[in-house]
Length: 265
Image (cartoon, rainbow, N blue to C red; front, side, top):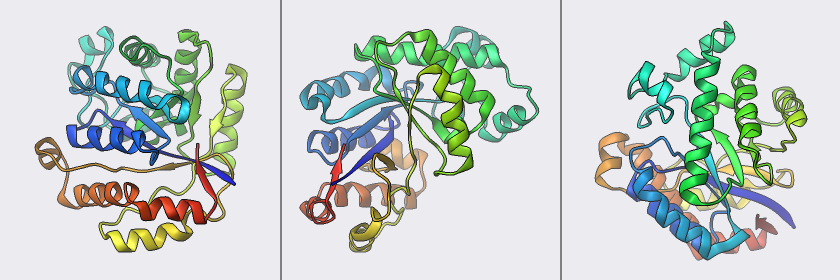
C-alpha cells in the first residue's frame, strides 16, 4: 500500500473552486486542502470549509497556502497594507530580491504571521500543513522567514511543509533548513496532468502514481466554472480544472486507486 497526499492548494480563489474542493474532500477524493487566506473570498468561504473539516475529521489535511505574490490576493498585515496597498509582489520581483538579498524581511515575516493567525482564528484550528504560493518556498531567504513565522505561532503540533521542488539537492537543502525548527517536509511528486480531455486523463492516471515514494504530495487544481473564474482565468485552465474535478469525482478514479494499491492519506 502506497500512501499519497493528493491535494489542492487554492481554496479561496473562486466559489466554483471552493465548492469543488469541499465536495471532493467530503467524498474522499482529495486528502489535502490548502486555503489562501489573502483572497477577497476567504472571509465568506472559511465557514463552509470549517464545516467540511468537522465532517471528515482526520481523513483530510487542512492547511494554509501563504501568498506573498500573484494575482487575486491582497496583504493581510497592517504594515504591508500601509506600504504596498492592496497589491502583492510579482513573483519575479520577489525572486530577484531574494537572490540579491534585498527582501523586506520584517514586512514579509509580519505578513506570514498575519496569514497564519487569520487561518487559525477563523478556522478555529491549527493548520495541518503550510505551503507557499507560486513555489516561493524554494528561495532560502523566504523559507527562513516562513519557518520563523511558524515558530512564532507556537502551534501544539508543527505543521507539515509542502515542498515546491522535486526530490534532489534543493529538496534536501530545504529539509535541512526546516529541521532546526522541528518541521518536516512532504516531498513533491508529479502533479496531476493538466489536460482537458477526461478519457485521456483517466488513461494517464492509470500509471501516474507508479514510482512515487511513500507520502509524496501530488498537486491538483480541480474546480467548477463560475463567473469569477471565467473573469480571472483563461478558458483552457478552466477546462483543465473541470476535467480534473470530473475525473477525481468519478468511480473510475476510485477503482484506479484501488487497482494500483494507492491510499490517499
